[in-house]
Each structure stands twice: as C-alpha cells, then as structure tokens.
Length: 298
Image (cartoon, rainbow, N blue to C red; front, top):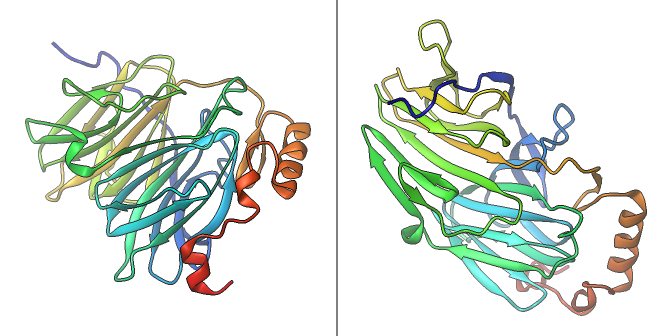
C-alpha cells in the first residue's frame, strides 16, 4: 500500500547563495531573505560555513527557537546562564530562547565547520516562556534505514522511528539520504507547511518522475499545501541528501527586528528596552562576556 496518495508539489524554488553573516561567517540563507521573509512558522534557514576566528559572537534572541544541526566539524556554544558545550558533527541543539537568551556560537579552532540553523517561531502565548535547551548527541539521534533510504529523525517520525525532541510549535525535521535508484514516500501532516532543502546530490521531487528535472544542492523547495506527503527519487549516480521540514502554521502577525521576533511593534520596542536596560529576562547580560569574546579582545 502506498504511504502517500498524493504527493505535494513544488510551488517555489530558491537557490541559496552565499552571503556574509555574523563575524566573517558565510551562510547560504534560504528562508529569511528578501524573496522569502517568512514561511510560517519558519523564520530563518541558514546553511553555514565558518572557520576560526570568524563566527557568531555574543548576541541575543527572544520569541522563537533556534535549531542547530552540525554537518561537519564543531561549534562551541556559551550563554549568559553559564552554560557551555560543544556541538559536534551530527549533534543537535534545540534552543528555546523564549523571553531571552544571550549566547555565543564560535567554531572549533581547526578547519571549516558546517551546519544548519533553523529558526522556528513561537506562538504569542509561548514567546515569554523560560529558555530551555534540548541537546542530543549524534549517536542518540533516532535513525532508520530501508530500501536504499536512510533517515535521521531530528523531530517527528519517519520509517517507524520517532524523535525524543519536544516541539512546542509542532514540527517535523528529517534528514534523508537516498542511494542511487531509491524512491522515498514520506507522509506529512496535512495541516503543516513544509519544505525541502538539498544538501548533496540531486533529486526529483513530486508526483511525476518522468517529466520532472533533477534539482541540485543548496536549493530550497517550498511544497504546496495539497497532498499528504512527499515523493522523491534519486535517479542519479551519486548520493542524494536533503532535509524535509514541516511545521504547524501559527497564523499570527510577525514583528521582527533582527534577533527579536514578537507579534507587534510595541512588543519589539519593549524588547529593545528590556535588552538595553538588562531587565525582564536579560538581567544576566549586564556583566556577561563569552570566553570567545574575551579571547578575541573586544
């Protein structure tokens, strides 16, 4: 029996081009750029590449979640609560910024560090909750393999395995690798907005594999709201790797100023005031500097 009766089609396609971000880092931003400011509930998707001393030094967040998934190398994370750790290749950090986090994300000393960072919006009732971290090492991420398909289940469920991650905004996040000749059918909850981002190789996505052209790496594919899943083929001679991400739309107004995402301009103004005055969740930012920032001498 088919897992997907009607595949979602591609409604828009973007090639994510490199741009500068942070302190000398290079990102390929696909969501959160001028052509696609917001894809409810997703605010930003960056494929980042960074080598020391470049990185993302001390900066704040409020009102959403950041999901950091390392593909190569390692990044050291510090925050103003005194938390510090290293996110290595294959590891996941799911950070709920809520009412406020100030943190630093800096690369390991040697080589080029690569990964993905996704920003997921929070509903108005959750924007000012206490910050929370969910961290899973690579060997504890749920995986399954079948018929030339391997999946790492960051959030949600695929091929009969489930992630342990709790998603306050209902979300699926699946990392698929398809061997040449393999064919995927992956259900998607009907209410979700969903997209594909291709990391490696090229594939065909949608109902018809005979007339569609293969799409290559660094392309973001927005999927239609019609259909109960995704169908994909790897008809090439190399590995195809992509993420499939979906989430429940919030349907709420978005007011954003950089790393602050609220519902109204008044709430943004209050957030700026809180951050500048070290109040209402940002108290510990007054005297905190990351070790990376101190080492960089500024």
